[in-house]
Image (spheres, rainbow, N blue to C red):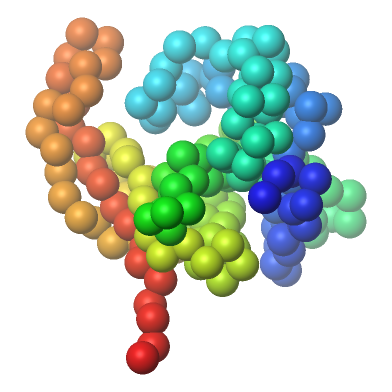
Length: 182
């Protein structure tokens, strides 16, 4: 599935729309902000060139499905962040999930949780993915709570799995498994 086949996903307060190259400046600004970057495992600065390469090599090939999160209450959609599925593994019916809220005034309002819930529904029901997983810094309690509300379950903590800013950090894995009725 590529970006051109994706449809908008809507709820009562937010919408997820397929990312386009026109979103490059937003993504670069958001991903390079300390508030977003400090919660990512990959912390190198993102340039417009690296983002366009990501779009070309990952999104357009279907290896990544990425949406822009928009607030829709005011009538005119306001982009506030992004949600995506990466490393989509069709053979094992799984993918890694990621989300970030880029706009400061949109954080802490449950938008990421709503976007995660919408994306999980899409992943399980439209894409037929059995397992959607994520990795987060184990000490990121607010992200953990948000992911739990969205339907993810903790699987375990990998101690000292990554070295960030000269310090080893624990990584937690969480997943959402599609329930199958037999």
